Length: 250
Image (cartoon, rainbow, N blue to C red):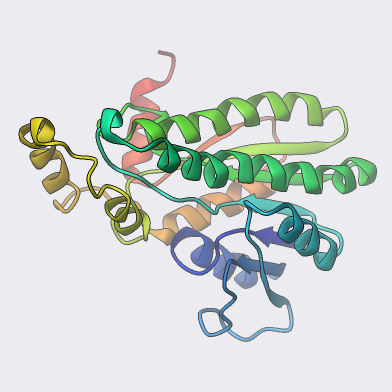
């Protein structure tokens, strides 16, 4: 049986991805900072365990307790919205600790067992902001762009050992916790001088239009995890697919 470990499963993309892999017959290790068993259907193929991707001790315990991991899905992430000049460096460090260094730490913890077996897949979930720039998201974009470069290089060095690395790039998903998390972290980072610029942008976040659902992302993560080609990037959601197509070859 194939085992997948997914980070950030309490809600949003991670929760939908855990459900999708369970539907496909995988053994699923769903990780959360604060484990909740009520958000996923009961299954003898499911384990819900604690994991804080910013803690080396938590990572070591989760990886050791999971047994052999065939697929690692690095999904855990946080958002931040605001003018960069007013964004506290502490906020910047928090984003990189989870979105970038957390991905790297989880990957480093799992690669040795995959390399020794000569098989395995690492799927890193980034964002469509890596496909097209978005204002008021400079720090978030930087944290995700770093993962894109990391994964592209990682894929080349791990291919020699039969291990694949993939990127999933979701579009904007207002139904996830990203907007709520981002708005929570924007307190005080929209200075008065930026308000005329920021107001229509913030209003557009709630506007109707193409939106990526957690189910969209879960389906693409599954596709990436089971893809045996050398394809690296997988856009998820109609808006992300449109961006990927419009920037292809640029």
